[in-house]
Structures are given as C-alpha cells and as structure tokens.
Length: 315
Image (cartoon, rainbow, N blue to C red; front, side, top):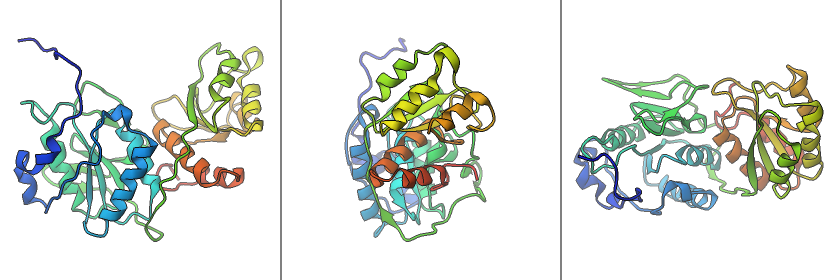
C-alpha cells in the first residue's frame, strides 16, 4: 500500500458535524460549533486574527471557554496574536489541530480535540495551544516538527498543563489584571530577516525599506557582523527612516542581551530594540500590535515591546 497522497491536503469541513464524529465531547461540555473560515492555515493572517478575536469576545458572554480548530502551520502566530488582542482574558481559549486528519485511522485529531475541550472547561484564563498531551502558552509556542505528533515546542516556558492520568495545571498560569477588552488592530507591514555570515547589509535594507517594522533574527544573544559587513549601519538607516527593528535570537532557547557583547551593543546604539526571549511568532505579532496601536509614538511602542504583556517574556 502506498504511503503517498494523490493530491495536497486541503481544509476539511468535518467541523460541521464535529460532535457526531467525536461524541465523547458531550461528556465533557455542552458544545456549540461554528465555522468562521475554511482556509489552509498558510492563508491565515491579521484579517482572520481580528475576526477571530471579535468572535471570541462575543462568545465570552455565553461560554466558559473557547476551542479554536486551526491548521498547524500558522497556529503559533494566531495564538500569539490572540494573546495580545484579548486583553484581560478571564477564561481559556485553546487552539488545537492535528498532524493527521480526523478521518484517518492513526489520527491524533481525536485526542487533541478531546484534550482541548477538557482544558476549555478549566480555570486556565490564557490563550494556549493543546497538542500531544500538553497545553503550551500560545505566545511561547512554535511549530518545531512537521512529522511528529509532538509538533509544538515551548523552550522558554513550561507547559501550562499536562494531560496524563490526571490534568496537572502549572502554577505559572496567568490571571487577568485588567477588564476584558478586544483590541484586534494589527499593522501588516512587518517583515522578518535572518542574519547570516557575510550578509550584504544592503539586503537588509531591501527587506525593510517599505516596512513599518522588522524582526531581526540575530546570532546567539543578539550579535551581528560588524566591520566590512556591518549590519548595524543599515539598522540605523532603517530606524532613522521610521522602521522599528526588534531583535530576537536564532537560538532555539535563551534570549537577547544587547549589552553583553560589542557585536550586539552596536544594534542598541543603532536604535534597535531587544526582544529578550521572544519567539519569532510572538515578536512578529507583538510588533504588529505595537505599530497599530501607537503609529505615531515610538516611545510608547518601545515600552510595550519590552514589557511582559501576556506572558510572552520571562520576567
């Protein structure tokens, strides 16, 4: 029997009858379903995040928790975006999906969905990603494996919950410290650039020249080439031209410290902002939010970017 597929995967409409397909959900909660959009997750972006945030805000008045079934490719971006858009969140919003479709025999969809609905009934007022028996903080998660059931990792933050024989909820679950409000504004003119050895600084300029914000993935704790291949001069040009540059690390774990080495300090001197231990998904969405909320106030944007707003930074 061949293990290949005759055609690429496309979004499935099984959510129309999700309770019929997974009847055990009714033993966990009273479930109501709605299809907001039927897209490959590669097509999901700021417009869909905004609509989803508004729908969750309206659902909050009637439901104790929300489960979002989402494709895995951009799930971490959506989770991060929602964590910033749903300010003062006081109930769980759980994103989940699967590596194999629900209709397949060896699917992980059934377990992930049951776990997600279970978690949505519990006192975990955060946006999280439920996958492979763990609930990860949404703005700390990243898809790290396209071929395993454990698709998501959260190297800088322990799971919010682990689902085994019992459900173990972490002591670091956040609590709301302000009234709930939906602010789903995102500035789409944000790009990402990886620093590479010998990189032509002009390449960075071409990426960032029409952008309002740039997430720069530097080496180690925030280092870049200096001298002949001085990236910092191009960063200064971008900053002086009105583009906010947010620096995060290419390393899987850890964070940025622009004061530790000369090759990182030059970025701070050029006006770049340290992203500390933000993951790239959180960095992109947080920068989009900052630029949308304070388009004319760089100081307010910087204050927002360096603050721990929704658990995205280690404090």
